[in-house]
Image (cartoon, rainbow, N blue to C red; front, top):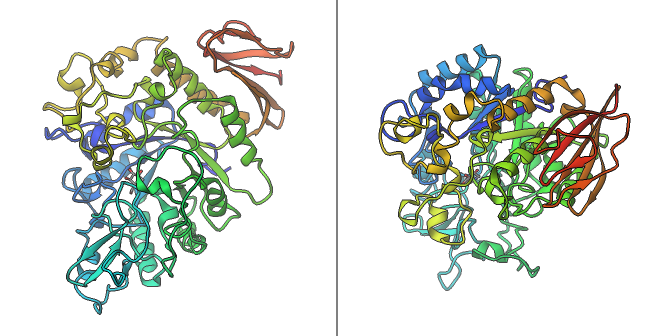
Length: 527
Ligand code: NOJ
Protein backbone atom coordinates (compact mmCIF):
# COMPACT_ATOMS: atom_id res chain seq x y z
CA UNK A 1 0.00 0.00 0.00
CA UNK A 2 1.25 3.49 -0.80
CA UNK A 3 2.64 5.27 2.28
CA UNK A 4 0.35 8.27 1.81
CA UNK A 5 -3.01 6.49 1.63
CA UNK A 6 -4.92 7.23 4.80
CA UNK A 7 -1.86 9.01 6.24
CA UNK A 8 -2.01 11.65 8.97
CA UNK A 9 -0.05 14.76 8.03
CA UNK A 10 0.75 17.52 10.51
CA UNK A 11 0.65 21.05 9.12
CA UNK A 12 3.45 23.35 10.23
CA UNK A 13 2.87 27.07 9.80
CA UNK A 14 6.55 27.94 10.05
CA UNK A 15 6.21 31.59 11.09
CA UNK A 16 4.57 30.42 14.29
CA UNK A 17 6.19 27.10 15.12
CA UNK A 18 9.52 27.96 16.77
CA UNK A 19 11.78 30.99 16.54
CA UNK A 20 15.50 30.20 16.83
CA UNK A 21 17.14 33.54 16.01
CA UNK A 22 15.24 35.94 18.23
CA UNK A 23 13.31 37.92 15.62
CA UNK A 24 9.85 36.89 16.81
CA UNK A 25 9.20 34.79 13.69
CA UNK A 26 9.57 31.01 13.48
CA UNK A 27 12.22 29.52 11.20
CA UNK A 28 13.67 26.26 9.86
CA UNK A 29 16.24 25.81 12.63
CA UNK A 30 13.45 26.25 15.17
CA UNK A 31 11.32 23.68 13.36
CA UNK A 32 14.22 21.20 13.29
CA UNK A 33 14.62 21.67 17.06
CA UNK A 34 10.96 20.77 17.54
CA UNK A 35 10.75 17.82 15.16
CA UNK A 36 10.62 15.34 18.04
CA UNK A 37 7.31 16.85 19.09
CA UNK A 38 5.89 16.05 15.65
CA UNK A 39 7.42 12.58 15.52
CA UNK A 40 6.09 11.95 19.04
CA UNK A 41 2.53 12.43 17.82
CA UNK A 42 2.89 9.36 15.62
CA UNK A 43 1.96 11.14 12.38
CA UNK A 44 3.22 9.99 8.99
CA UNK A 45 4.70 13.28 7.94
CA UNK A 46 4.41 17.01 7.83
CA UNK A 47 3.12 19.60 5.41
CA UNK A 48 5.20 22.74 5.65
CA UNK A 49 3.53 26.01 4.63
CA UNK A 50 5.71 28.20 2.33
CA UNK A 51 9.27 29.06 3.34
CA UNK A 52 10.33 30.48 -0.04
CA UNK A 53 11.68 33.95 -0.86
CA UNK A 54 8.79 36.34 -0.48
CA UNK A 55 7.96 39.93 0.43
CA UNK A 56 5.49 38.27 2.86
CA UNK A 57 2.51 40.38 1.84
CA UNK A 58 0.46 37.17 2.13
CA UNK A 59 2.91 35.61 4.56
CA UNK A 60 4.74 33.45 2.05
CA UNK A 61 1.89 32.67 -0.35
CA UNK A 62 3.38 35.45 -2.50
CA UNK A 63 6.57 33.83 -3.78
CA UNK A 64 9.33 35.93 -5.35
CA UNK A 65 11.73 33.04 -5.98
CA UNK A 66 10.42 29.47 -6.02
CA UNK A 67 13.87 27.96 -5.58
CA UNK A 68 15.20 30.04 -2.68
CA UNK A 69 14.47 29.93 1.04
CA UNK A 70 13.52 33.30 2.51
CA UNK A 71 16.29 34.54 4.87
CA UNK A 72 13.60 35.01 7.51
CA UNK A 73 13.32 31.21 7.62
CA UNK A 74 16.96 30.28 6.94
CA UNK A 75 18.94 28.91 4.02
CA UNK A 76 18.84 26.09 1.51
CA UNK A 77 21.35 24.29 3.74
CA UNK A 78 18.86 24.53 6.61
CA UNK A 79 16.23 23.11 4.28
CA UNK A 80 18.49 20.19 3.34
CA UNK A 81 19.10 19.56 7.05
CA UNK A 82 15.35 19.61 7.60
CA UNK A 83 14.80 16.99 4.89
CA UNK A 84 17.48 14.77 6.45
CA UNK A 85 16.17 15.21 9.99
CA UNK A 86 12.58 14.55 8.95
CA UNK A 87 13.61 11.39 7.15
CA UNK A 88 15.81 10.29 10.05
CA UNK A 89 12.64 10.20 12.16
CA UNK A 90 10.83 8.06 9.59
CA UNK A 91 8.60 10.96 8.55
CA UNK A 92 7.71 12.35 5.13
CA UNK A 93 8.03 15.99 4.13
CA UNK A 94 5.38 17.67 1.97
CA UNK A 95 6.06 21.23 0.88
CA UNK A 96 3.65 23.94 -0.25
CA UNK A 97 3.79 25.11 -3.87
CA UNK A 98 1.95 28.18 -5.08
CA UNK A 99 1.51 27.83 -8.85
CA UNK A 100 -1.53 30.01 -9.50
CA UNK A 101 0.26 33.30 -8.78
CA UNK A 102 3.61 34.75 -7.80
CA UNK A 103 4.59 37.85 -5.89
CA UNK A 104 4.81 41.08 -7.90
CA UNK A 105 8.47 41.05 -6.78
CA UNK A 106 9.16 37.86 -8.78
CA UNK A 107 11.62 38.44 -11.65
CA UNK A 108 9.09 36.91 -14.04
CA UNK A 109 6.55 39.58 -13.21
CA UNK A 110 9.12 42.38 -13.17
CA UNK A 111 10.04 41.42 -16.71
CA UNK A 112 6.46 40.82 -17.77
CA UNK A 113 5.22 44.24 -16.71
CA UNK A 114 8.05 46.02 -18.50
CA UNK A 115 6.39 46.15 -21.93
CA UNK A 116 4.13 44.10 -24.18
CA UNK A 117 6.86 42.41 -26.19
CA UNK A 118 9.38 41.03 -23.70
CA UNK A 119 10.07 37.28 -23.38
CA UNK A 120 7.76 37.01 -20.34
CA UNK A 121 5.07 39.35 -21.69
CA UNK A 122 2.51 36.55 -21.80
CA UNK A 123 3.47 34.85 -18.50
CA UNK A 124 0.76 36.70 -16.56
CA UNK A 125 -2.84 37.62 -17.36
CA UNK A 126 -2.78 41.03 -19.03
CA UNK A 127 -5.67 42.80 -20.76
CA UNK A 128 -6.57 46.18 -22.16
CA UNK A 129 -8.95 48.52 -20.40
CA UNK A 130 -12.48 48.86 -21.67
CA UNK A 131 -13.16 51.97 -23.79
CA UNK A 132 -14.08 53.88 -20.65
CA UNK A 133 -10.86 52.91 -18.85
CA UNK A 134 -12.50 50.44 -16.51
CA UNK A 135 -11.16 46.88 -16.00
CA UNK A 136 -11.60 44.30 -18.79
CA UNK A 137 -14.37 42.43 -17.00
CA UNK A 138 -16.22 42.09 -13.69
CA UNK A 139 -13.97 39.54 -11.93
CA UNK A 140 -13.45 40.19 -8.23
CA UNK A 141 -10.55 39.15 -5.99
CA UNK A 142 -10.97 36.76 -3.07
CA UNK A 143 -9.62 39.27 -0.57
CA UNK A 144 -11.85 42.13 -1.70
CA UNK A 145 -11.95 44.58 -4.61
CA UNK A 146 -11.57 44.10 -8.35
CA UNK A 147 -9.34 41.29 -9.61
CA UNK A 148 -7.56 43.77 -11.90
CA UNK A 149 -4.87 46.37 -11.21
CA UNK A 150 -3.67 48.96 -13.71
CA UNK A 151 -0.03 48.98 -14.72
CA UNK A 152 1.12 52.23 -16.29
CA UNK A 153 4.19 50.79 -18.02
CA UNK A 154 2.25 48.34 -20.15
CA UNK A 155 -0.83 50.53 -20.20
CA UNK A 156 -2.83 47.43 -19.34
CA UNK A 157 -4.50 45.75 -16.43
CA UNK A 158 -3.10 42.59 -14.83
CA UNK A 159 -5.26 40.07 -13.08
CA UNK A 160 -4.97 38.79 -9.51
CA UNK A 161 -7.37 36.43 -7.76
CA UNK A 162 -5.96 37.39 -4.35
CA UNK A 163 -3.90 40.50 -3.43
CA UNK A 164 -2.83 43.01 -6.06
CA UNK A 165 0.71 41.99 -5.08
CA UNK A 166 -0.08 38.39 -6.17
CA UNK A 167 -0.34 38.63 -9.99
CA UNK A 168 -2.03 35.65 -11.61
CA UNK A 169 0.30 33.42 -13.61
CA UNK A 170 -0.90 32.57 -17.10
CA UNK A 171 -0.71 28.81 -16.60
CA UNK A 172 -2.31 28.31 -20.04
CA UNK A 173 1.02 29.33 -21.49
CA UNK A 174 3.12 26.15 -22.03
CA UNK A 175 6.28 28.09 -21.16
CA UNK A 176 4.84 28.90 -17.73
CA UNK A 177 3.93 25.26 -17.26
CA UNK A 178 7.48 24.25 -18.21
CA UNK A 179 8.89 26.68 -15.67
CA UNK A 180 6.62 25.34 -12.93
CA UNK A 181 7.48 21.75 -13.80
CA UNK A 182 11.14 22.75 -13.41
CA UNK A 183 10.37 24.15 -9.95
CA UNK A 184 8.72 20.86 -8.98
CA UNK A 185 11.81 19.01 -10.21
CA UNK A 186 14.10 21.29 -8.19
CA UNK A 187 12.40 20.29 -4.94
CA UNK A 188 12.06 16.62 -5.89
CA UNK A 189 15.81 16.61 -6.44
CA UNK A 190 16.24 17.97 -2.90
CA UNK A 191 14.38 14.95 -1.56
CA UNK A 192 10.89 16.15 -0.68
CA UNK A 193 8.18 13.49 -0.57
CA UNK A 194 5.34 15.53 -1.96
CA UNK A 195 3.54 18.77 -2.47
CA UNK A 196 0.45 20.62 -1.35
CA UNK A 197 -0.69 22.66 -4.34
CA UNK A 198 -2.07 25.99 -3.20
CA UNK A 199 -5.41 27.19 -4.63
CA UNK A 200 -4.74 25.07 -7.70
CA UNK A 201 -8.28 25.44 -9.06
CA UNK A 202 -7.41 29.12 -9.59
CA UNK A 203 -4.53 28.20 -11.87
CA UNK A 204 -6.28 28.75 -15.22
CA UNK A 205 -8.68 31.51 -16.26
CA UNK A 206 -11.09 31.80 -19.19
CA UNK A 207 -9.12 33.08 -22.17
CA UNK A 208 -12.06 35.08 -23.50
CA UNK A 209 -12.30 36.91 -20.13
CA UNK A 210 -16.05 36.33 -19.93
CA UNK A 211 -17.88 38.16 -17.14
CA UNK A 212 -18.89 36.01 -14.16
CA UNK A 213 -22.67 35.83 -13.64
CA UNK A 214 -24.13 36.99 -10.33
CA UNK A 215 -24.72 34.40 -7.61
CA UNK A 216 -28.34 34.94 -6.68
CA UNK A 217 -28.49 32.24 -4.02
CA UNK A 218 -28.95 33.49 -0.47
CA UNK A 219 -25.81 33.42 1.64
CA UNK A 220 -23.34 35.65 3.46
CA UNK A 221 -21.78 38.33 1.27
CA UNK A 222 -18.78 39.83 2.98
CA UNK A 223 -16.78 40.67 -0.13
CA UNK A 224 -17.69 41.51 -3.75
CA UNK A 225 -16.22 38.07 -4.59
CA UNK A 226 -19.21 36.52 -2.78
CA UNK A 227 -21.66 38.13 -5.25
CA UNK A 228 -20.53 36.05 -8.23
CA UNK A 229 -20.53 32.51 -9.55
CA UNK A 230 -16.88 31.85 -10.30
CA UNK A 231 -17.32 30.28 -13.69
CA UNK A 232 -14.63 32.11 -15.61
CA UNK A 233 -11.92 33.57 -13.37
CA UNK A 234 -10.92 30.05 -12.22
CA UNK A 235 -11.78 26.34 -12.53
CA UNK A 236 -11.21 25.95 -16.27
CA UNK A 237 -11.21 22.48 -17.87
CA UNK A 238 -7.55 22.77 -18.89
CA UNK A 239 -6.29 22.46 -15.29
CA UNK A 240 -6.17 18.62 -15.13
CA UNK A 241 -3.82 18.42 -18.14
CA UNK A 242 -1.33 20.60 -16.25
CA UNK A 243 -1.70 18.41 -13.16
CA UNK A 244 -0.96 15.36 -15.30
CA UNK A 245 2.35 16.92 -16.30
CA UNK A 246 3.27 17.37 -12.64
CA UNK A 247 2.25 13.81 -11.81
CA UNK A 248 4.24 12.36 -14.70
CA UNK A 249 7.36 14.04 -13.41
CA UNK A 250 6.78 13.05 -9.77
CA UNK A 251 6.21 9.41 -10.74
CA UNK A 252 9.75 9.24 -12.11
CA UNK A 253 10.92 9.84 -8.52
CA UNK A 254 8.97 6.92 -7.03
CA UNK A 255 6.28 7.07 -4.41
CA UNK A 256 5.68 10.82 -4.22
CA UNK A 257 2.44 12.50 -3.18
CA UNK A 258 0.37 15.48 -4.30
CA UNK A 259 -2.55 16.97 -2.41
CA UNK A 260 -4.50 19.84 -3.95
CA UNK A 261 -6.13 22.65 -2.08
CA UNK A 262 -9.45 23.28 -3.81
CA UNK A 263 -11.26 26.43 -2.77
CA UNK A 264 -14.87 27.32 -3.51
CA UNK A 265 -18.47 26.33 -3.22
CA UNK A 266 -18.23 23.80 -6.05
CA UNK A 267 -14.99 22.25 -4.84
CA UNK A 268 -16.27 18.67 -4.74
CA UNK A 269 -16.47 18.30 -8.52
CA UNK A 270 -12.98 19.71 -8.92
CA UNK A 271 -11.58 17.51 -6.17
CA UNK A 272 -12.89 14.56 -8.16
CA UNK A 273 -11.62 15.87 -11.48
CA UNK A 274 -8.15 16.52 -10.07
CA UNK A 275 -7.75 13.10 -8.47
CA UNK A 276 -9.55 10.64 -10.73
CA UNK A 277 -7.64 7.73 -12.28
CA UNK A 278 -3.94 7.23 -11.79
CA UNK A 279 -2.54 10.10 -13.87
CA UNK A 280 -3.59 13.10 -11.84
CA UNK A 281 -3.11 14.04 -8.21
CA UNK A 282 -3.25 11.57 -5.35
CA UNK A 283 -5.60 13.55 -3.15
CA UNK A 284 -7.38 16.87 -2.66
CA UNK A 285 -9.06 18.76 0.13
CA UNK A 286 -11.87 21.26 0.05
CA UNK A 287 -13.38 23.54 2.66
CA UNK A 288 -16.39 21.38 3.64
CA UNK A 289 -15.29 21.23 7.26
CA UNK A 290 -12.97 24.23 7.27
CA UNK A 291 -15.72 26.74 6.58
CA UNK A 292 -18.45 24.85 8.51
CA UNK A 293 -19.65 27.03 11.36
CA UNK A 294 -21.09 24.00 13.12
CA UNK A 295 -20.43 20.29 13.05
CA UNK A 296 -23.52 18.35 12.06
CA UNK A 297 -24.20 14.70 11.34
CA UNK A 298 -25.62 15.73 7.93
CA UNK A 299 -22.36 17.40 6.99
CA UNK A 300 -20.40 14.22 7.64
CA UNK A 301 -22.98 12.08 5.83
CA UNK A 302 -22.89 14.42 2.85
CA UNK A 303 -19.10 14.27 2.48
CA UNK A 304 -19.11 10.48 2.83
CA UNK A 305 -21.82 10.16 0.15
CA UNK A 306 -19.68 12.15 -2.27
CA UNK A 307 -16.73 9.77 -1.93
CA UNK A 308 -18.29 6.31 -2.14
CA UNK A 309 -15.05 4.68 -3.32
CA UNK A 310 -16.28 4.04 -6.86
CA UNK A 311 -14.01 2.62 -9.57
CA UNK A 312 -11.51 5.24 -10.78
CA UNK A 313 -12.43 7.64 -8.00
CA UNK A 314 -9.61 9.57 -6.33
CA UNK A 315 -8.80 9.64 -2.65
CA UNK A 316 -10.10 12.50 -0.49
CA UNK A 317 -8.32 14.42 2.23
CA UNK A 318 -9.97 16.11 5.22
CA UNK A 319 -9.02 18.85 7.56
CA UNK A 320 -10.92 20.72 10.25
CA UNK A 321 -8.45 23.53 10.98
CA UNK A 322 -5.67 25.33 9.20
CA UNK A 323 -4.06 28.75 8.82
CA UNK A 324 -7.02 30.06 6.79
CA UNK A 325 -9.97 29.48 9.13
CA UNK A 326 -10.83 29.98 12.81
CA UNK A 327 -9.61 27.12 14.98
CA UNK A 328 -12.08 24.26 15.20
CA UNK A 329 -12.33 24.11 19.01
CA UNK A 330 -13.89 27.58 18.98
CA UNK A 331 -15.69 27.45 15.63
CA UNK A 332 -17.68 24.35 16.56
CA UNK A 333 -18.11 25.20 20.25
CA UNK A 334 -21.28 27.33 20.01
CA UNK A 335 -21.09 28.17 23.72
CA UNK A 336 -19.99 24.66 24.73
CA UNK A 337 -16.69 23.63 26.29
CA UNK A 338 -14.00 24.11 23.60
CA UNK A 339 -11.84 21.38 25.17
CA UNK A 340 -14.65 18.85 24.83
CA UNK A 341 -15.26 19.98 21.23
CA UNK A 342 -11.53 19.58 20.48
CA UNK A 343 -11.57 15.99 21.80
CA UNK A 344 -14.68 15.08 19.82
CA UNK A 345 -13.29 16.65 16.65
CA UNK A 346 -10.00 14.73 16.97
CA UNK A 347 -11.83 11.42 17.37
CA UNK A 348 -13.98 12.16 14.33
CA UNK A 349 -10.99 13.27 12.23
CA UNK A 350 -9.09 10.08 13.02
CA UNK A 351 -12.03 7.91 11.99
CA UNK A 352 -12.63 9.49 8.57
CA UNK A 353 -11.88 7.73 5.30
CA UNK A 354 -9.20 9.59 3.38
CA UNK A 355 -6.07 11.43 4.35
CA UNK A 356 -6.29 13.73 7.33
CA UNK A 357 -4.43 16.92 8.12
CA UNK A 358 -3.83 18.05 11.70
CA UNK A 359 -2.99 21.74 12.09
CA UNK A 360 -0.29 22.73 14.57
CA UNK A 361 -1.88 23.37 17.97
CA UNK A 362 -4.90 21.18 17.20
CA UNK A 363 -3.16 18.43 19.19
CA UNK A 364 -3.28 20.81 22.17
CA UNK A 365 -6.92 21.70 21.61
CA UNK A 366 -6.05 25.37 21.13
CA UNK A 367 -9.06 27.66 20.81
CA UNK A 368 -9.05 30.58 18.36
CA UNK A 369 -6.66 33.23 19.74
CA UNK A 370 -7.82 36.75 20.54
CA UNK A 371 -5.96 39.20 18.31
CA UNK A 372 -6.88 42.85 18.93
CA UNK A 373 -7.50 45.00 15.85
CA UNK A 374 -4.22 46.92 16.38
CA UNK A 375 -2.27 43.63 16.16
CA UNK A 376 -3.94 42.31 12.98
CA UNK A 377 -1.47 41.77 10.15
CA UNK A 378 -3.39 39.68 7.61
CA UNK A 379 -4.41 42.01 4.76
CA UNK A 380 -7.63 40.03 4.32
CA UNK A 381 -8.49 40.52 7.98
CA UNK A 382 -7.75 44.22 7.91
CA UNK A 383 -9.68 44.82 4.68
CA UNK A 384 -12.77 42.93 5.76
CA UNK A 385 -12.77 43.60 9.52
CA UNK A 386 -14.82 42.73 11.52
CA UNK A 387 -16.27 40.16 9.07
CA UNK A 388 -13.05 38.31 8.38
CA UNK A 389 -11.88 34.75 7.93
CA UNK A 390 -10.11 35.10 11.29
CA UNK A 391 -6.79 33.97 9.92
CA UNK A 392 -4.58 35.89 12.36
CA UNK A 393 -6.30 34.26 15.33
CA UNK A 394 -5.49 30.85 13.84
CA UNK A 395 -1.84 31.73 13.17
CA UNK A 396 -0.52 32.79 16.57
CA UNK A 397 2.64 31.12 17.96
CA UNK A 398 2.78 27.61 19.39
CA UNK A 399 2.75 27.57 23.20
CA UNK A 400 5.60 25.25 24.17
CA UNK A 401 6.47 26.11 27.77
CA UNK A 402 3.85 27.68 30.01
CA UNK A 403 6.31 29.50 32.30
CA UNK A 404 8.77 30.74 29.66
CA UNK A 405 8.42 34.22 28.16
CA UNK A 406 6.18 34.08 25.07
CA UNK A 407 5.46 30.45 25.78
CA UNK A 408 8.97 29.41 24.77
CA UNK A 409 8.24 30.31 21.14
CA UNK A 410 10.65 33.24 21.04
CA UNK A 411 12.74 35.47 23.33
CA UNK A 412 11.06 38.56 21.94
CA UNK A 413 7.49 39.68 21.31
CA UNK A 414 6.27 37.43 18.47
CA UNK A 415 4.84 38.71 15.18
CA UNK A 416 1.37 37.75 16.48
CA UNK A 417 0.57 37.80 20.19
CA UNK A 418 0.60 34.72 22.42
CA UNK A 419 -2.89 34.24 23.83
CA UNK A 420 -3.01 33.47 27.61
CA UNK A 421 -5.68 30.82 26.86
CA UNK A 422 -2.97 29.06 24.86
CA UNK A 423 -0.37 29.19 27.62
CA UNK A 424 -2.55 27.14 29.95
CA UNK A 425 -2.66 24.51 27.20
CA UNK A 426 1.12 24.58 26.49
CA UNK A 427 2.96 21.39 25.57
CA UNK A 428 4.75 21.31 28.97
CA UNK A 429 1.40 21.46 30.77
CA UNK A 430 -0.06 18.57 28.77
CA UNK A 431 3.07 16.46 28.35
CA UNK A 432 2.94 14.60 31.63
CA UNK A 433 -0.84 14.36 31.90
CA UNK A 434 -2.28 11.11 30.53
CA UNK A 435 -5.71 12.70 30.46
CA UNK A 436 -4.60 15.66 28.31
CA UNK A 437 -5.65 16.50 24.76
CA UNK A 438 -2.06 15.88 23.68
CA UNK A 439 -2.12 12.37 25.14
CA UNK A 440 -5.50 11.72 23.53
CA UNK A 441 -4.24 12.91 20.14
CA UNK A 442 -1.29 10.51 20.37
CA UNK A 443 -3.58 7.64 21.31
CA UNK A 444 -6.02 8.33 18.49
CA UNK A 445 -3.30 8.68 15.86
CA UNK A 446 -1.84 5.38 17.07
CA UNK A 447 -5.28 3.79 16.83
CA UNK A 448 -5.65 4.90 13.21
CA UNK A 449 -2.31 3.29 12.48
CA UNK A 450 -3.22 0.04 14.24
CA UNK A 451 -6.57 -0.38 12.50
CA UNK A 452 -6.47 -0.62 8.71
CA UNK A 453 -10.26 -0.29 8.84
CA UNK A 454 -9.82 3.30 10.07
CA UNK A 455 -6.97 4.17 7.79
CA UNK A 456 -8.11 2.54 4.59
CA UNK A 457 -11.46 0.86 5.04
CA UNK A 458 -14.86 1.52 3.50
CA UNK A 459 -17.04 4.03 5.31
CA UNK A 460 -20.79 3.55 5.57
CA UNK A 461 -23.04 5.99 7.38
CA UNK A 462 -25.69 4.12 9.40
CA UNK A 463 -27.37 7.10 10.99
CA UNK A 464 -27.07 10.85 10.66
CA UNK A 465 -30.08 12.36 12.30
CA UNK A 466 -30.11 15.25 14.73
CA UNK A 467 -27.15 14.97 17.08
CA UNK A 468 -26.63 11.25 16.34
CA UNK A 469 -23.92 10.16 13.95
CA UNK A 470 -23.11 6.48 13.53
CA UNK A 471 -20.93 4.97 10.82
CA UNK A 472 -19.05 1.79 10.06
CA UNK A 473 -15.51 1.32 8.88
CA UNK A 474 -14.74 -2.05 7.26
CA UNK A 475 -11.58 -3.56 5.90
CA UNK A 476 -11.24 -7.29 5.28
CA UNK A 477 -12.03 -9.03 8.55
CA UNK A 478 -12.08 -5.78 10.48
CA UNK A 479 -15.30 -3.96 11.30
CA UNK A 480 -15.62 -0.95 13.54
CA UNK A 481 -18.60 1.17 14.47
CA UNK A 482 -18.01 4.80 15.34
CA UNK A 483 -20.79 6.63 17.18
CA UNK A 484 -21.00 10.29 18.15
CA UNK A 485 -23.32 12.52 20.08
CA UNK A 486 -22.95 16.00 18.61
CA UNK A 487 -25.56 17.48 20.92
CA UNK A 488 -25.94 18.79 24.45
CA UNK A 489 -28.13 16.05 25.94
CA UNK A 490 -26.95 12.52 26.72
CA UNK A 491 -28.29 9.86 24.37
CA UNK A 492 -28.38 6.12 24.03
CA UNK A 493 -28.07 4.31 20.74
CA UNK A 494 -28.64 0.64 19.95
CA UNK A 495 -25.04 -0.57 20.03
CA UNK A 496 -24.71 -4.14 18.70
CA UNK A 497 -24.33 -6.43 21.72
CA UNK A 498 -21.28 -8.16 20.22
CA UNK A 499 -19.46 -4.83 19.95
CA UNK A 500 -16.38 -4.40 22.14
CA UNK A 501 -15.66 -0.86 23.26
CA UNK A 502 -12.26 0.14 21.87
CA UNK A 503 -12.07 3.75 22.92
CA UNK A 504 -14.10 6.90 23.40
CA UNK A 505 -14.00 10.56 24.37
CA UNK A 506 -15.97 12.80 26.72
CA UNK A 507 -17.45 9.84 28.57
CA UNK A 508 -18.00 7.71 25.46
CA UNK A 509 -15.30 5.39 26.81
CA UNK A 510 -17.67 4.37 29.64
CA UNK A 511 -20.32 2.04 28.25
CA UNK A 512 -21.19 0.85 24.74
CA UNK A 513 -24.43 2.46 23.61
CA UNK A 514 -24.29 5.39 26.02
CA UNK A 515 -23.09 8.79 24.84
CA UNK A 516 -22.95 11.78 27.19
CA UNK A 517 -22.98 15.23 25.50
CA UNK A 518 -20.22 15.59 22.86
CA UNK A 519 -19.13 12.01 23.44
CA UNK A 520 -17.91 9.56 20.85
CA UNK A 521 -17.04 5.87 20.95
CA UNK A 522 -15.58 3.17 18.74
CA UNK A 523 -16.76 -0.42 18.94
CA UNK A 524 -15.02 -3.43 17.43
CA UNK A 525 -17.42 -5.84 15.77
CA UNK A 526 -14.81 -8.19 14.41
CA UNK A 527 -13.63 -10.03 17.51
C1 NOJ B 1 -4.59 29.51 0.07
C2 NOJ B 1 -3.63 29.69 1.21
O1 NOJ B 1 -3.84 28.66 2.14
C3 NOJ B 1 -3.88 31.06 1.77
O2 NOJ B 1 -3.22 31.26 2.99
C4 NOJ B 1 -3.47 32.07 0.73
O3 NOJ B 1 -3.78 33.37 1.18
C5 NOJ B 1 -4.20 31.82 -0.60
N1 NOJ B 1 -4.25 30.43 -0.96
C6 NOJ B 1 -3.51 32.55 -1.72
O4 NOJ B 1 -2.30 31.91 -2.02
